[in-house]
Length: 377
Ligand SMILES: [Zn+2]
Image (cartoon, rainbow, N blue to C red; front, side):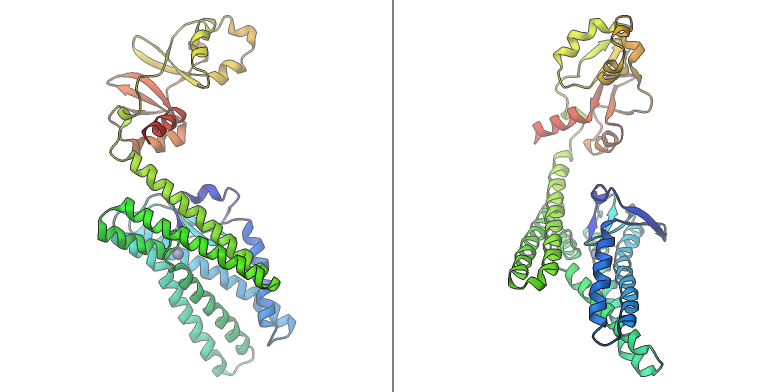
């Protein structure tokens, strides 16, 4: 699976390794699935081996299981980086692996290769483990039977990984492939994103239906049913986020800062006692920051929280200059700045300073921009 802005979904993930410069993180939920995999493998191998051997094989199998997922995701990550897309890292979580990228592919061809390489590598791994499973018993050494059994199971895991990921619904790899093809044929990226995400939602609904059936038909299948239902829910959420992002993308493209502001926000006069600005503050309920300026333009930003944090007695003889924060460190934009460039700066600093020539004329907060974008939508 692939995700652009999924990092926020895994706030508890911790980094365990760095492979080829790519950070590998593990979400604590993975521990649950690791226990489940060991338990399931122990049952599977226990049919032909004694318990001790079965547990050892299950632990090795579980390591290879997660190694297979990592191998698949590393394929996406390294190929993406090779094509100039910044990769934030790979996160393994309860439902598999996700590669987080900062940008989207620039062309349908890039998209196709980055998406296709994961399932392709899983198929190659499936074939390799299949060969080991087939030929290990012919070596005739002790323990080769166990090696063959583990290799056989992991071969099927990789085959399943490839097949499931090729289902044509975003954010699964097959969905990305579909998206690349629609993008190529129609030349319309937004449309391709929407179609592949809708297909992903359809897949998600089908998965949940199948999962509910599994749970109803046999209580023994309840655990599997729950896992499939969880995967369906995850796919639904991810596909919905993709549609939202595509819509946001369309809203931003071709627009600049000038499209946002109807009029500059209020500017509090510099060197003015705080008591005198109270009426201005009251006229803008809900507003948390105010630009402070003089004839030369905006010189600082007054945060309401700073005023509230002061001793009420002090407010009587302090001025706007005393409490304002300097503009240093803020990103400066102009009315011609594309909204595409504005959003990352806003996400980082919560506000930007708007400049007209040498003068700073306004301060835009993430809240105001959000409200303006809603009006545009
Ligand atoms: Zn994949």
